[in-house]
Image (cartoon, rainbow, N blue to C red; front, side, top):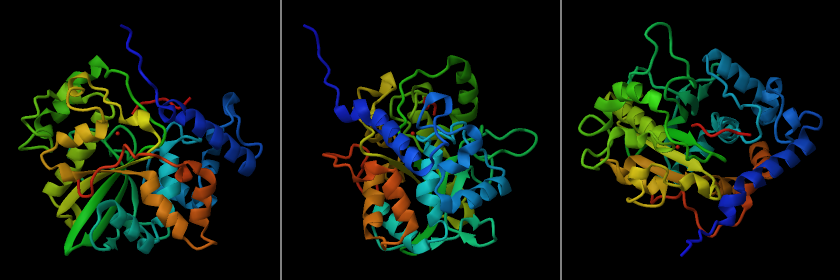
Length: 346
């Protein structure tokens, strides 16, 4: 008997849908700039700042330059997750009240007090940081000479926020996804170096993964698990030393609910555990609540809907990321409250 696999239309068409939507956005708001290499959803690399909300173009360039942060290869691509993250979160770096409501929506509990992460380009307090690598070489990744570069060649969280809730200082490392999906096997030539770096800090009692999970470290070298467990190790080490006073450090994963390909379990060794990558991953942790997965829609749609009519941040997101308003019968990226590169953008 031939087994027929039904393909969810959301899974099959999400990327094509977003390409069409970004093409339409560029045609309307950036006439004449799109069409790089024949793709209407791409800008020329030199025009990467046009891919950002106009309100943050100048300050983003200065922030990245001041902190020696690397722009991703596809920063001029309409489907860039780095750019998507900046468009959603950078305008909130100086809006702690809105940011507090976002964190409360993700974690539950009382409205938190947001704490400064670092100074912005004009010396003002910023309550969101980007491409965060920690203040020490926690994961044995930094170069032996010179300084590490945020956003390149070391584990970097797409964003970071700090807050005080219920009398405790906490940190969230934010991993941001847009249209990514995974499936390619890991490169064997990198296995030895990955084992050298992470073998002794991945599993309990020295790392965040359960030692009785009946898995070997190479089983986690499949994306998105490879990225997720590196983020979790970074969070675990930051918590161990209470970096910047944080008594708890967790990972918050944010992705569109309609990007269902992202939830596929890619590692063969993990397929017997379940069919949702984020639920499977969470089951591997010694403290399951250290990983939170939320959909972009559930976190941001209510804030956008409640924003004042003239709010430029909400207006831009509503115009550009139309998926926020898409009806979804389920949100496969969602996890209970208090409970990840290498795809090519072509």
